[in-house]
Amino acid sequence: MNTQKICIIGDGLAGLSTALILSQKNVKIDLYVGTNKNYKSKIDNRTTAISESSFQFIQKKLSIKKNIFWPCKEIKLFFEEKKIVKNFLNFKEQNKKTMYVFQNKELKKKLISQILKKKKIKIRRKNITAVDYNNGCVLMNKNKMSYDLIILSIGNSSKLYQKITQGRNIEKDYKEIALTTTVKHNSKIDTASQFFLKQGPLAILPFSKNKFSIVWSVNNLFFLKNKNSLKKLLNQKIEELLNKPKISNIADIQWFPINLSLKTKYFKKNILIMGDGLHAVHPVAGQGFNLVLRDIKKLSELIDKKLKLGLSLRDSSLLKDFSHARQPENTIVGLGINLTNIFFKDNIFFSPFKKVILNNIKNFKFIKKISQSISDKGISV
Image (cartoon, rainbow, N blue to C red; front, side, top):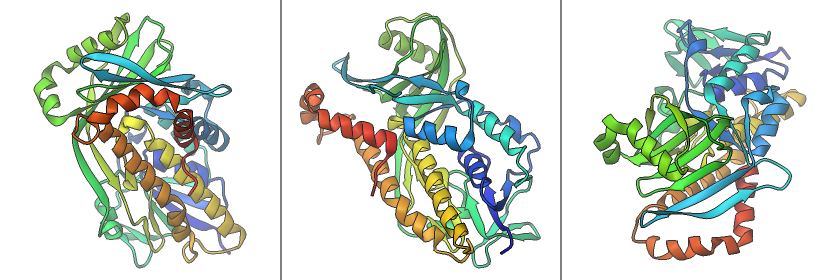
């Protein structure tokens, strides 16, 4: 059998990681990154947290140097009640880290550097105008390229997905904005913290000795009301929550809308959606990229099996097997994160029980153990 060809569209973390991992197999890969010749310089100032098992997977499969990952030994959870912020639960592992934090732009830079050295990956700076689902081809104006497997990794709202995702999906507009920035400081802040505040959940994620990132999810009305004074507001909030740390600089604040999107259909024929296109979740639990890495791992394992049996990726049951393997966990975790976000908001269903639950949750060690296991390794379904 001739060497099979895989097309990957998208140069975000999901697309780049998928390309590198699949390039370790007996396949050829075309990676479409668009026509921007300076695509290497696209800047994503956000930070991402991954679990210990996800970190080990990246180290094993991508050989990324450890120095871009900041290990966190502990995660502290806080809840605001009547303007008092209380620590109600801490996660700490005996013999391993609870999470690793990295800047998206730094990981992307490392992935691109490795991709440029891979002979099996050909970078194509062309814009895909359409996908021929019946014949397994991508179209670039009048040109057409055929592939054994096509992977779409281009965000969660691309028109290229429409023929796959028609029908019922789990969608929700949170009517919230995620504010994100980085803070330079001269204090000792090496613990990750999640604060469930009245205005919305705020996460503090250290990624170096004197820097941490903030992700604060607020409703649209709060954002619009305070849009012109966000940096001042964040500075005040940091001083309140961290007991007046020595802040030297707060970078420009970026923001993006928050939506829940869980696809019920993952593929059509030999064309698969990956990354945010499959599952966009609320940032409150920091599980988005963990789900992506588990998807890539499963796809890699299934491709290995098909290649060893000498099967064509185009005609095999590869994508059906992938969907059956990954959709249950992606859906359960996505809905679980949504429920967590609802629980910590003021609402008539949870508010009467919230105080009792949070004051006693430390006594239920099995809940803490299950939560840690799911956050680290996901759900085996």
